[in-house]
Image (cartoon, rainbow, N blue to C red; front, side):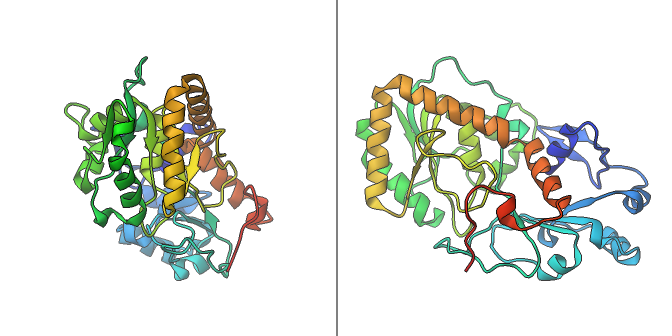
Length: 323
């Protein structure tokens, strides 16, 4: 997402520490003589230590005191911060924001931290949306408690309610596990990730729920890219462009049986009221593409980095609650 967002800004000159591959093709090549580029770069964007193993670049940043211009993108699926990087880097971006399973507010960090959700990526649009959607409901989670109580609750309820839908795909996931997800780097032919995207684009309605312990996931954004009416949980990741209930999507609480039942009843309603379903689905699709593409994520980061006032409330919509 970060590489795609940077590349979309034609006025930003970007150098890469490794090749960037999409659907079997090298999109951006590794930059030769990278160390010299690091010394003169305005910013150095790199992922968290758990997702980064180029020790020679870390040593170079130590030697030349480059950490103050590092934008540290912590994408671990955990609310924990890498405190030593928070104190050393010029900016800290955090993907999983609220605390653990109950999504309780986190303590205000000792240095400013910018929360940032997942988002749409270019590969989601490789397969077209069909002119006619012929599946009523899709829920791409396996009915297994190992997927977490939120996802298990919604898929279990939908399995019981399957008789209320004419055609549904509930409790099936063609990209199960890490191998399936990594197919995004493989060629398009017989690619399980693209087959999954093609499947959900036939859906009129898609139910998603967040995993545990993090808030935010790729399944939600894949759903928005499908053009379906998305039923999703409330996100507790502060955002400058949050989705609104009944305008862009349907928001429900997967830990509430009453909320799940109400959501299923709404799905039945919208399947009978096609124009209303299409309207909300279109609003959600357009809103996601306008404000949640990789380019938008880079705009968000650079606005934060260049801002003199890094009080989080100045950069997102709505109040930000801290413990």
